[in-house]
Image (cartoon, rainbow, N blue to C red; front, side, top):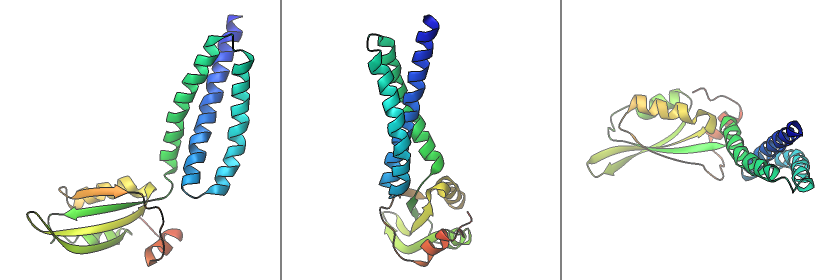
Length: 180
């Protein structure tokens, strides 16, 4: 009997981890505008959800099943977000302010394939170089590393753009010509 109870707990735990991971991925795909892939993922998500919930509801007298369901839910959130990090869907916009406007910053970034728009700026302590850089999220950490190598004192702010239209660079990314 104990073996069956342990097996049931492991099954419920596993099913809920998988369900919530699919749920997290589907939600992110939906937010990123990939609705057809999200719809396909939801087919598996709801099937797994019904299976896991059915196991718990059929055995409500076993509190350990409910606990396994709840723990699986929490672990599933972490697993789903880790999977999304690895997928790195979408783009990131990085605003950089360099305290040294004489560094050939934009040239070095463009040579690596990044789309850079730059302009002269003035800060509290004098002239600055301000830049806006757009890159796929999968290159985000590499971009930060490159920026730090060029100017370790650079001020960096990053955010995810909701929509991107036009520009030569977007076409380059879609063709796979970015090579950071």
